[in-house]
Length: 428
Image 1: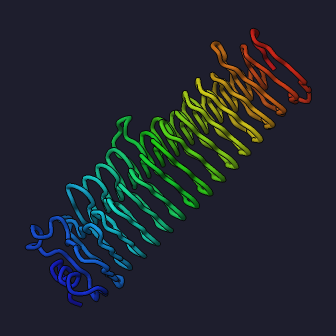
Image 2: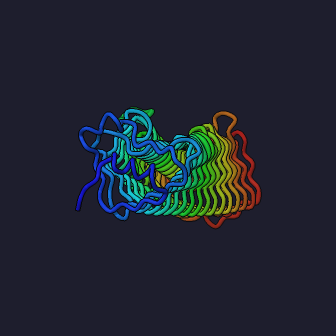
Image 3: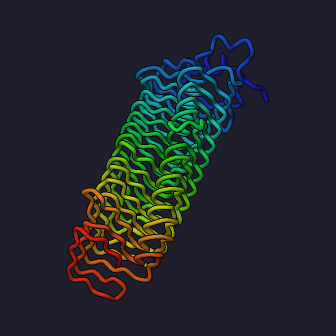
């Protein structure tokens, strides 16, 4: 079988609309200077069917540069070992429309967007991205519109932001898998092991496993993040947010699972702004310091119809509300452990809990279920809740120094119709 070069493929692109490769394509030594920025696609409505073959840039050049208003389709093709010192190691979509089907891009390198830099419209189906690298956005930098379906992102890496993806536009992810992506620097500002989001990100039916970063092991969100029917497992952050760091953004999470994620603060999620969780499961997450599942620092959070079980940290085995605002309703917190205080919940803010169950939580110091350290203007309000078999050195269920209000709640089979204590330490 004869192997073709870049010039051969360039000629095909400029003479045919439908191209089916019959061999691999490899950059020749003498072609490096000519195709440094890739094969320029300045013609419209081109379909390139790789027919199972590959295009290899030998670590020297970009492969494709798609120009403005051009509609291009790539399918059944593998792009290997591409390089750009600037945008898009394998592909720079420069205001074009690009669709990719059943293809692979791996071992490509760029300054930004190791595999693809998208400054147009990009849609990807049934494809894989692996072992790509960039300073920012190991696999894809999205500047405008991008939709991903049923694709795999594996072992991509970036120095600073977005081990797999950096999103600055509108990004939709459906039925994708993100595994072992990483931001590599050990600095505290290194973020988003799989994804760094700086605009609008929607995720559904996707999984994030074993991704790693200093902050946001799987995702760092700066703006708008919506997640549904997805799972986050064994992601790690050195600092904050084992799975998700929502430091400055607004995040909504529905019917999703977080398990075995780890960080210093917020084993699963760190929140510094606005967080809404409903019908989700957070289990067996670990924080070295605060909030085994969630650490809310100066933010607002709402939890509805969710379960927290077997999470662990020093303060707030499941949830640490640190000078923030929180609402928990119709939820279950069971089997969570704090090495210090607040087996299930640590509160140093304003927290309301409604119609929820605290069962078999444990702290080794104070507040087997809840520790509320309300020295300032903080309050803890509990309505129609049940506390059973929680355990602590002091106050098996609730330790609160002031600002406690309880109504119609059962604590170890004792009904509290109404309890309002503003100025005293309460141990229940």
